[in-house]
Image (tube, rainbow, N blue to C red; front, side, top):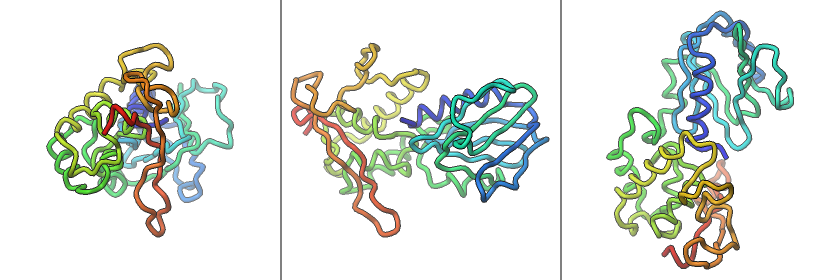
Length: 264
């Protein structure tokens, strides 16, 4: 599941493959940007911003978001793709490698000077060089009576956490995801824990929250509905948790997992 750590890893792979190279081909397969051709432009860098990827090419930025199914893959020139061609949204060629964005949830190309139009609303980036814990705490406190399990998932509060982190952080703090922010103790500790767990996982192929690196043993509650809690043995519960439906936006419900005994 793409979360901030997944996107951070993708940005590092793309940056290592493309930084400083000149594009020899640029095929954008999204109607709105299909006529954009960055051939001949130099890739300056690829960075992550929360769950967003920013590829700076010439004076333009290729902004993408993986959503649930998206992925960027890098191949040697002429290499066989591991995903179907109809899923490709953008194909970038250099003299020796090809980068392909498959099934991207968001893909747009904008002037680099206008990047804030795409990502300026985001809160402090948990994996960013400009991480600001005090600002993240201020934004979290401003959520008031909103459930803590929804607030920490809001990218306007902190950028990078996804559904797996939401459930695991709530468990580690011993708090139900439905508890209101303004009734949740020690918010600075929530900010600190959020930062520590995502930094710990940013270079791992599989996320680990329990300290157990054996396959399938890395989470306390996420994906374990009905299974015994690893601490107390109580069956893990799962319910859909999200903000009320807002006209024009639809439901924000996502699965939340917790232990009814270890969390309150």
